[in-house]
Length: 299
Image 1 (cartoon, rainbow, N blue to C red):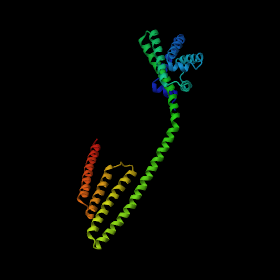
Image 2: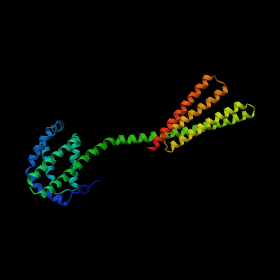
Image 3: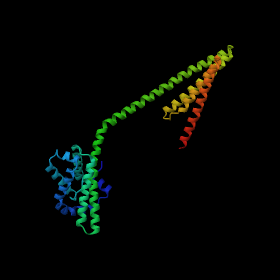
Image 4: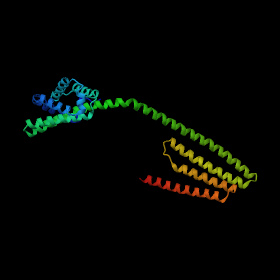
């Protein structure tokens, strides 16, 4: 948790800065009423802040604003002071004041004080040092007040973030389980293909050589498809990337097998020409996707 000392270190706010601001307090007190009047004239001039101020105790707000203004030059900037700023920030959040108007209001305060310094400190070095100290204390005030808005936003999204995170983890596990089921299913199909391949080999030795060889070759192609698909799914389970080329290759192998079966069935020329044309198109597609992946790999 950030302390006031941490804040001072981050903004390089020194003991000399404290003394300069404390010495400036009498002059600030002389102009406190003028500051409050100009500050609230500015706020009432904006419809967004005017709507909020009209629902509040105006005299009470002026007193609180005057106290805050004088606390800038109190000379004591400890954790109690930081907690006080945090309460002011939470009050702004509770009132429904957009953080944009907090920044705009602080800019107004900054201009008032810097002009006051320029008008009353003719010495260049003294004026520069006091301006820097004033800039630092205003920036630290704005930092603490703005943090109240960040805390409020975190409160709003905490439940949704937790729920979203849980749903994402649940979906990821479900997807992982489906991929695991798919791998097991492919393994089961592969075992069936091996059995069919063995049956085709037996048919070859029974004398049905042509049909047995073509069928066995088709089963080998299917087995190759199963191996490629399982390999791709295993890589996916290990966090690898999805490879579309594997699926295009599987379709190509399936088309080759279909051509072999078509030849075995003695299909007409038109059917075989259609299968050959489809295979050619798939081959071109495979080549183009492969080139695209290579180009992306070079980037």
